[in-house]
Image (cartoon, rainbow over all chains, first blue to last red):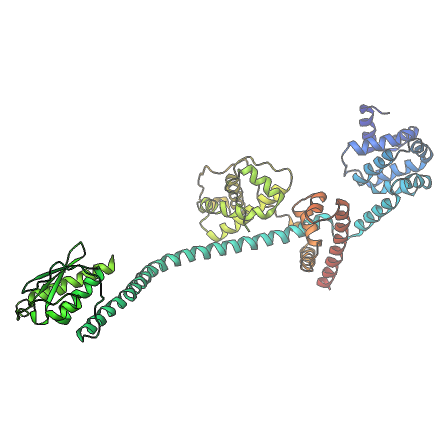
Length: 320
Length: 194
């Protein structure tokens, strides 16, 4: 066994090999295995080791083959053999490895481990030596392709980002337009919702005008049956009915008006006694003495005012 | 697809980046605006700065994959420093309006290494063309070569990522792919040089 100092010494000798060094090694051939093991396992590949020195070293092996092989035979454990191989393989000391592999007896020894694998690996090494491209060139080629791919990818991200910014700006502009259109849309919906009420209102008014449609009948509690000029008939009534009644009074029969209080109570003031009978019928009331007339004109202004009030009530009803 | 990196520390992001390049997009977007603003003070040409930023992100990725990279500052500072180095290398320093800016680290000397010039142009073109051909043909060949040479992934990781039973299979497949690449590149090279 060499100690570490001897190792360094021998490694130095190999690096600076001369005839005297080789002679030294010849005399210590039995230690070559250890030398190989120690040198290649523990020392990184020395790219400065030139071919001449490798050849010298190889010759040394061949000259002292017997000693060397005897050593291997004495230490035939797979582990040691694998280590020799790995040491030489990892250090890319291929030529030496081939020389070892070509020795007949060593071949037998090696066959105990992965001989086929060994050959394949040598074949790979041979192929590698004759390949058109080196590892460095493959590496650089892939680097170039990948860099360009990444640059393209980044450009696409930039474009997408730019497009997003434009979209946001466009949306901001559009937002104002949208707010106007939204307003118009809601306005249109409101109109659509209001129109049927308006038409129903008009239609009811018209129907009532021509006396074709009667207001809805509702149960009423009659507070007073005696109707005279300016008599106030107070009835409990649905709000819907109050509305119809009011319109009927104002636009249709023209003989009275109604005021609506919060308690949903209608006060019907009889203005036109001539038509009071119709009113009574519509209100489902009994007949009573109605004798006076011609109050219609007198209360015209008051009726107009009531019309306005009714319209406002109708509008409020729609809104709320 | 971008990955959400907002909740990760810079150290965690670098660790993630080692395992997958998919984090690059998120990193790219996160630091872009600041880097461009930083560079604008040195060089007002925004388009050039964008190219420089692209190269800075590529450098970050390549350094991260190299295996011996340690982040000594924040990712933002690191990117700023690379961008600054590239601007200084690209343009004459005298033409630059030198602005002292605190968000870079002078000790960071990284920048995109352009060692492609060491290969003869025709040969490089042949390699690139052959690689693209193999990539377009589909299969795992290009992926194995890319992961091994560019991402610097181990055979074990490639085997696991690409569903091979063991690393030896990947090694054999890689040898076959490399041989194929050699043949293709040689063929293209000969065609170019006829």
